[in-house]
Length: 82
Image (tube, rainbow, N blue to C red; front, side, top):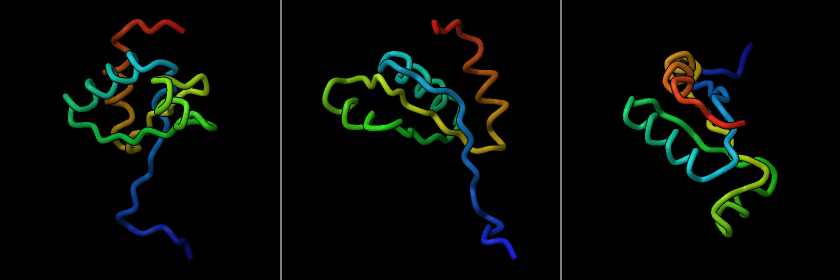
């Protein structure tokens, strides 16, 4: 028997960002398009982002599985520097 409930939400990584400007921009895009998301800092990145404004470890942006394609289409419209 599975421990998953019918209303459990599965969060999927959309993108990992490494600077505050890109993170803010993607957050705004997702907000404007009513796409819920969660930010998850890699390693000790959360402390680094609080202290210095950015994390060398990156921040994962997670979206609900059913919204992944819509979120990818919106984010992929912009030419991000890798």
